[in-house]
Image 1 (tube, rainbow, N blue to C red):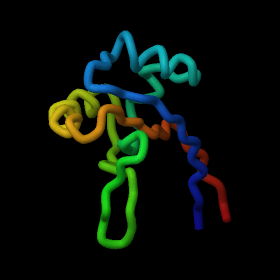
Image 2: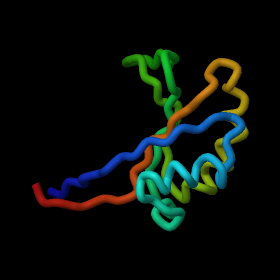
Image 3: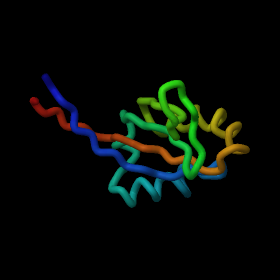
Length: 103
Protein backbone atom coordinates (compact mmCIF):
# COMPACT_ATOMS: atom_id res chain seq x y z
CA UNK A 1 0.00 0.00 0.00
CA UNK A 2 1.18 3.53 -0.71
CA UNK A 3 0.61 6.53 1.53
CA UNK A 4 0.77 10.12 0.41
CA UNK A 5 2.37 12.63 2.74
CA UNK A 6 0.91 16.06 2.05
CA UNK A 7 2.10 19.44 3.23
CA UNK A 8 -0.66 22.04 3.55
CA UNK A 9 -0.26 25.82 3.37
CA UNK A 10 -2.94 28.40 4.18
CA UNK A 11 -3.62 31.72 2.50
CA UNK A 12 -6.38 34.27 3.08
CA UNK A 13 -8.68 35.68 0.45
CA UNK A 14 -11.27 38.46 0.57
CA UNK A 15 -13.79 39.59 -2.02
CA UNK A 16 -11.58 42.49 -3.07
CA UNK A 17 -8.38 40.38 -3.17
CA UNK A 18 -6.45 40.32 -6.42
CA UNK A 19 -4.04 37.69 -7.66
CA UNK A 20 -1.03 40.01 -8.04
CA UNK A 21 -1.52 42.21 -4.98
CA UNK A 22 -2.89 39.75 -2.40
CA UNK A 23 -2.44 36.11 -3.39
CA UNK A 24 1.06 36.13 -4.94
CA UNK A 25 2.71 37.84 -1.91
CA UNK A 26 1.18 35.26 0.43
CA UNK A 27 2.42 32.46 -1.83
CA UNK A 28 5.91 33.95 -1.94
CA UNK A 29 5.95 34.17 1.86
CA UNK A 30 5.39 30.41 1.90
CA UNK A 31 8.04 29.72 -0.72
CA UNK A 32 5.51 28.93 -3.45
CA UNK A 33 5.29 30.10 -7.05
CA UNK A 34 2.60 29.84 -9.71
CA UNK A 35 4.55 26.87 -11.09
CA UNK A 36 3.92 25.01 -7.80
CA UNK A 37 0.19 25.63 -8.25
CA UNK A 38 -0.13 24.34 -11.82
CA UNK A 39 -1.54 21.16 -10.28
CA UNK A 40 -2.60 21.18 -6.67
CA UNK A 41 -5.30 20.16 -4.23
CA UNK A 42 -7.05 22.96 -2.37
CA UNK A 43 -9.77 23.40 0.22
CA UNK A 44 -11.89 26.54 0.50
CA UNK A 45 -12.89 27.18 4.10
CA UNK A 46 -14.63 30.06 5.78
CA UNK A 47 -12.59 32.09 8.20
CA UNK A 48 -13.75 32.92 11.69
CA UNK A 49 -16.75 31.59 13.59
CA UNK A 50 -18.94 30.69 10.61
CA UNK A 51 -19.41 27.00 9.68
CA UNK A 52 -21.70 24.74 7.65
CA UNK A 53 -23.96 22.25 9.43
CA UNK A 54 -23.38 19.21 7.20
CA UNK A 55 -25.36 15.98 7.87
CA UNK A 56 -22.52 14.23 9.72
CA UNK A 57 -20.82 17.21 11.40
CA UNK A 58 -20.23 20.94 11.41
CA UNK A 59 -17.32 22.12 9.23
CA UNK A 60 -15.86 25.37 7.88
CA UNK A 61 -15.22 23.62 4.54
CA UNK A 62 -17.09 25.03 1.54
CA UNK A 63 -15.33 23.24 -1.31
CA UNK A 64 -12.54 20.76 -2.04
CA UNK A 65 -10.97 20.92 -5.48
CA UNK A 66 -7.92 20.25 -7.58
CA UNK A 67 -6.27 21.62 -10.67
CA UNK A 68 -4.53 24.85 -11.64
CA UNK A 69 -5.15 27.04 -8.61
CA UNK A 70 -5.03 30.39 -10.41
CA UNK A 71 -7.60 29.29 -13.01
CA UNK A 72 -9.80 27.53 -10.49
CA UNK A 73 -9.77 30.56 -8.17
CA UNK A 74 -11.00 32.76 -11.03
CA UNK A 75 -13.86 30.28 -11.62
CA UNK A 76 -14.78 30.08 -7.92
CA UNK A 77 -14.65 33.84 -7.43
CA UNK A 78 -18.14 34.27 -8.92
CA UNK A 79 -19.97 32.04 -6.47
CA UNK A 80 -17.73 33.03 -3.56
CA UNK A 81 -18.63 36.68 -4.17
CA UNK A 82 -22.28 35.76 -3.63
CA UNK A 83 -21.54 34.32 -0.19
CA UNK A 84 -19.66 37.33 1.14
CA UNK A 85 -22.79 38.79 2.74
CA UNK A 86 -22.51 35.95 5.27
CA UNK A 87 -18.74 35.64 5.48
CA UNK A 88 -16.26 38.41 4.73
CA UNK A 89 -13.11 36.34 4.49
CA UNK A 90 -12.12 32.91 3.25
CA UNK A 91 -9.01 30.89 3.67
CA UNK A 92 -7.58 28.45 1.19
CA UNK A 93 -5.70 25.39 2.30
CA UNK A 94 -3.29 24.37 -0.44
CA UNK A 95 -1.36 21.20 -1.01
CA UNK A 96 1.17 21.67 -3.75
CA UNK A 97 3.52 18.77 -3.30
CA UNK A 98 3.28 15.20 -2.23
CA UNK A 99 5.65 12.43 -1.33
CA UNK A 100 4.58 8.83 -1.78
CA UNK A 101 5.85 6.50 0.92
CA UNK A 102 5.40 2.77 1.45
CA UNK A 103 3.43 1.71 4.50
